Image 1 (cartoon, rainbow, N blue to C red):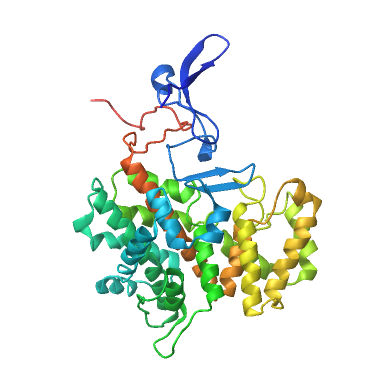
Image 2 (image 1 turned 90 degrees about the vertical axis):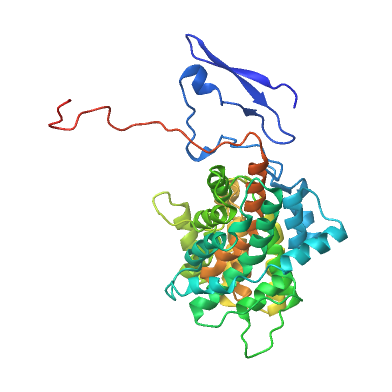
Length: 431
């Protein structure tokens, strides 16, 4: 790597220090502040880490101003149109798209690990039937480490690769089991002749009583949803996985931590919130009322599924999800459904509204993915579990990248302390 440039931080009286600047292959330059405290006795202050690069990464690049999302350099639009999910998994894990031979071997490995240990089913009995699927997933995915303790050497590349295969293969099985448990239905085992997305839909919707055949349009829609959610740079859940992994924690515990973070309504729960919002609005005649509430700074109501923290332009995933949404509605003849008509009308009215346009509050991927998942027959409380399915490969790719990075250290943020100064406990007498 070429020698970095430097920047001088100073105040009116003195130069504080000279800090190196690093340049990546794309995106903003970064100021290396690792020596700042040593040289100045001062920390940086950046709540939410909005201006902080926490690591070097070669996996995903986002340009929020231009609406660009690249996986290993490939535009998300091209991958979603030409690849299937397991190809994208291979790409994120290995850095390049697979050859036909490599893809065949990778898919075989995933297929051969989709079943879970039979004793793992006992974990479900400890949860209430009305437990949220994400609560169950956190526990069960974390428990996987208890079944594969012989292959948990994070310094071993072979062990890390096996953990990646097991997680990608088993998380859909566990997610479907969460749904079946909550409904009192028997668990459905995966079938080796089915593809990744089709297998999940069967485990979700089939019963031992009847033959189940998934609609190919719905299989393709789910596969695309998984691709669009596979990774998104250093978001909250991915950063959580990296922080947990920085201590040397095993990959199953790290992914369980990512699932817990993803569960938050501001992160993976956003598409679930879109459906709740649509049901609250109830009828297209009330759309103007709720748009007015969204514009009122004194009203806590938010228009869910519009705008994005990173994208200041159209979310590139949203364009693809919108196309998928209409393909699904056509295949299922659901355009006249009250909920879907309401969503389409809300989208059209908001896109024509100067308030939202001037602030670039365009529909994001969560707005459309909630509608698609609902059409696929996925219960609302399972939406985030589907998100976790897609994001598992991104989490494990970042975890592996971090473990392989010779610069990685245990995460240890600092703080700006604003509590009381030193004081003595009343009555304390020094000895």
